[in-house]
Length: 473
Image (cartoon, rainbow, N blue to C red; front, side):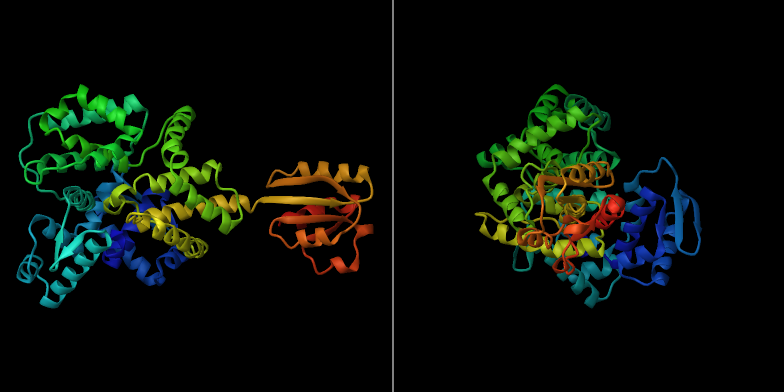
């Protein structure tokens, strides 16, 4: 959500930093197209990035089409991102609103900007708050206490700036003990970025509990208790000393943090157990999610219910949408290829129609949706590698020869129809027009009226290899 408001040059540098951190190299032409800038602008962005992060850049080189850049091996990704995002006037203005709502004079004095720029920043920030579902009354945002905390977390994580009073002795050690004990208990693995989100979120909770006390209700507690992480957090919270620094209700904000953070596992068994628990909550027990899946199945003519890859991607998207808290969480930036942008345009109406029928307001973080689209494009691409093959021949021996040759193909999935067709029927011609359906027709049975159908491929014992290539390309 917030990426739509960040300064464009900062956003591009953040994306480039993430790419270099992960892959060490970028293709200049491809990246400039993704970022929708010319190559000169892209190179200027890289130059600015190198200058800002100079102490952590250990190697950089460029050839004609590629640029390579390596960072110090032990530097966390979020540390680099914070240095790049820190100059953002938009983030600074959001921070001012969270501390004490600023007026124009404050903005011009604090950030040394013109009155017109201050007005523009204020308008942008209020628009951002509104799109996050925050109530705006008389041009003033009215945060709930969880919204305020998550916004403080979002800005602090992105900039590395947070006004923290003196903390109790040993506080950070107790935070580490709590997180480590929890991960050991539940088997979840939180990477450096998500551990930092948890750390910052816990200290935001600590400094907010007196000034902006958290209030909960029975429905809120009932919903958070449905999450698989609830039992683990409750047990470790009660066993460790960290709770001694918090009022009792802060436990529920800690649960919100863990519900929002992404995680992984170190074993297939743990992945399956987590999926089983989440599947129960988000698919089996949710008629609303089943309706959404049905919309996808109808639109794409594909059985998504029961497809683990799709269900995992959808659960990952929907798990953190509860009460629209997903809108406030720091997310990685994603850029979609042209193919993925077309898929997003195709999928967006499905979500919008579904959301319009819900009895409550549900909003999805655009960046989280982009991550889902990337996963969905991979699922659909795999599906495009599945072919349904019909064989037309008047010889059962040749049918077996063709079938055996098809079954040896490993570059894609071929489902060979068990029925032997002895002539090219109108039904088969209709099937040949469907995507990923091919008809291998014995050359002696291949009639002139089959020529217009690209899905009908003549075949013989001598040309089987060529016919298979034509079928799957």
